[in-house]
Length: 151
Image (tube, rainbow, N blue to C red; front, side, top):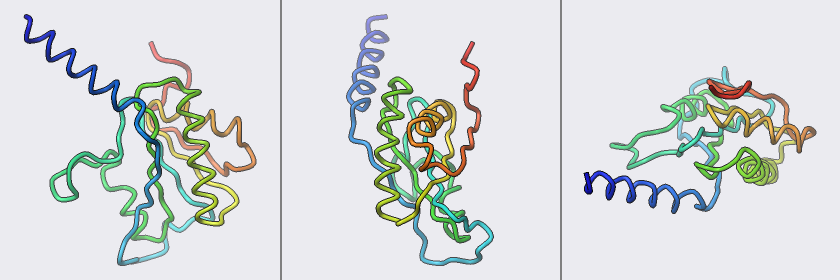
């Protein structure tokens, strides 16, 4: 029983340490573009859910949060970005972090707007960004998001 509590304490400590980790956006790049079927007018920006990540481990033996969707879109002409926000925080805090990354992506790409895709808690996060930066958001796509709250 004591070992279980110790392991649980270690887990929550590691989550707490990563909750305030630096936020950043990573562009999915490719050496070979095979088509333009996924090309869009604006960059596509993906946001993870609660306790989410961009990737864990190495490219060869790791786990990719979005299951190689971003590199596949990039190979087919899309300008895709994966964002990193606090994994366990409020929608407002995550939204402000994402809004800053959206501004950085716009500055780097020269685009006027972005298409936002949010998974799980990423759904309310992208809706927050659309509320504070409506002129910077072309579209919202929420995947498995608790848009009406969670039970």
